[in-house]
Length: 252
Image 1 (tube, rainbow, N blue to C red):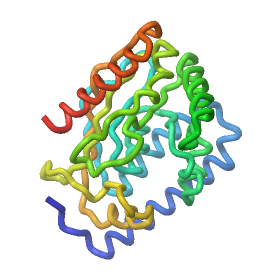
Image 2 (image 1 turned 135 degrees about the vertical axis):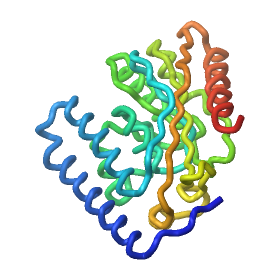
Image 3 (image 1 turned 120 degrees about the horizontal axis):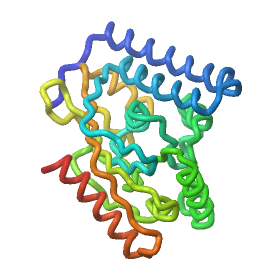
Image 4 (image 1 turned 120 degrees about the vertical axis):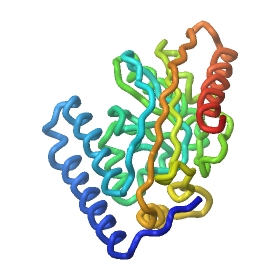
């Protein structure tokens, strides 16, 4: 069920606050971040992400807790909002497709927040990125991937790409499944935040502003770890296990 649209005045107020907040984020990353420690940058990222979601009209409902041991987060992918939802949990560096670099404002924010950009179709670059991810994981940084490799409207899951999970195996760290869903205040699934098909970023932005308050439900599953000695079969099994864990939470 789609919630009734907001009034023009409320959309204008929301949109104004969001744009000011995004511009404020640019000031943070371009002017303040060079003088901040990494710890402080990450703290700002989480607080800023929570505020952005609030200005958009989202509320967060979180079930479960992230493990104390740092590792990789594997989440289903519905919207560009997903990145801020996960960062509201904990400061996370995402692996993202490289065309995000060219997104207005968000691309600049991503570049200055530890994002790892992946060139699609380049195996050599994917190999280099995998090494970078493994090193970051070994040194205690949270990373996050969307193993589907693309977005859905939230009503189903695509198969998971096992290669995106290999760095966690190489670093010998756990992978935590995180299920993301968008709902209206009555608990019905909302398709408005879905960033799919030919929808432009601006169209998606406006659709989100048009909704009455939405809920982002985040369910954190049990971490899964595979030994580096498990080989390719271990990687494939990890992908299936994570896919099943998220699917059961979302659709059972």
